[in-house]
Length: 510
Ligand code: XMP
Image (cartoon, rainbow, N blue to C red; front, side, top):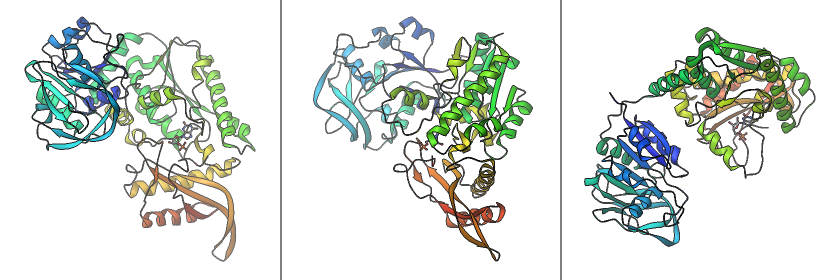
C-alpha cells in the first residue's frame, strides 16, 4: 500500500519547516520540496495533498517563484498559505495588490462555511504577516474568511479541491490553525494519519543503508539528546562502520560519563571510543576565571582531543552531526550581539578529514528528536535529558575551576535533579541545575562555625531558551533540596534560589 504523503512546496517562507512539523504532528508523512521541482517529480511522489508555503517574494514580480500550473490540475487537494495563497490566486486569474500598510500580528478572523473550518466558532484569532493581499479571487472561487483589514483572508474552490489562507495556520498565534490543517489533511485530503516517528526511523535507516553501505562514518558523541539520536540512527544503518568518539572532559554531571558509555556499548553495541581526559582539561583551565576564556580553552582542547583520536582511525567518509532545525535557523541569522560563544564544537569539520557531513536530524524539532529517540529504544533518561552546555560544569563553577569544586557541584546538582524528578517537576521545568558560586560565607553546623561555599539553584521554564522565566518550584521541594544538600555535601553551608528571568540574566551563570 502507498504511504500517505503530503508535499510541502517551499517558496522560502520563514515557517516552512513548521508546516512540515505540523503535518507530522498530525501523524501524516510529509516531504518538503523546493518550488523548482518539476510536475513529473511531484506526480511521482503520489501526494494525497499539497501545501504551498509562504515566502518573501511578491507574486507580481517578474522573477517571482512560481509552480507549474499543472499542479492545480492533478486532482490533488492544494492548500496555499500566505504567499502560496497569493500565488494560487495570481496563477488562476485572480488579482493580488499591494496594501497601503503591512498587516502584521494577531487579527480577529471571521470564518464562513468551509470544510477547512469545520467544527469551529465563527470568530477566532489568526496570525498575519503580509503586505500584498488577494484583491479578487479567481472565477469559481469563493471567499471564506475575512479580517477587518483583509477582505480575502481565505478562499476556495472545493470542486477543484483548491484552498487558500492568507494567514499562517501553522503558528501557535493562530489557535485554531492546527485544527484547520487537520481538517485539510483528514477531511479534504482523506488522510488516515497512520504515520509515526518509528516510520521516520525505518525510512531513514533504509535509505542510509543504501547510501552509506561499506563507508566509514564518524560521530562526535556528547551524550546529549541530539548527538545520541543521530548516532543510534546511523548505527542502525551502518553498524560497526560507525565510530563514536566521546570526549569525557571531566566536566560532566555525576555518573554521566559512565551512563553514556553503558547505553552505547551495552544497549546498542556501538563502536565507542571514550576518551578520559579530565586532567588534560583541568590543567589547561587552572586559574582561569573568565567565562569566555574557559569556553575557548575547552572548545580548542576538545578539537585537539577529537583530532588525535580521529587521526588514529584515519580518513572517514562521513562525519555525523546532531544538528537540529532550530540550530539551522539560529546559525542563519548571525546578526545579534555575542553574549556567549555557545557553539564550541563548530570547528570540528575544519580539522577532521572526511568527505561529507551527515545531519539526519536537520529537519526535526527538539520534541520530534525526542520522539524519534524513544522510537529507537533510547532510554528515557537520555531522551529526556535537559540541555547541557558543551563546556559542561566549567560554566557552573564560578571563578577558578578545581576538582574539589567540581565534585561538590556534582553532588549538589545530583540531589537537586533527583528531588525535582521525585516531585515530578522534571518534565515541566526545561532546564535546572546547581551552580557553585565563588563566595564563601559563615554558617553554624552543630556547635561549629563553618566558612563554606554557597550553592545557587537555577531552574527555568522556556520554549526557545532565548527568553526564560524562573520556575516557581514549591517551597517544600526547595526546602528538601536545601536540607539534603547542606546535610549530604561537605563544604556547602548556604543555598540560594535564582529568581531572575532571562533577560536580564542568562540561564547559565557564566
Ligand atoms: P544562556 O546561558 O545563554 O543559555 O541563557 C541558553 C542555552 O544555551 C546553553 N548554553 C550553552 N550551550 N555551549 C553550549 O553548547 C555553551 O557554551 C553554552 N552556554 C550556554 C544553556 O545551557 C542554555 O540551554
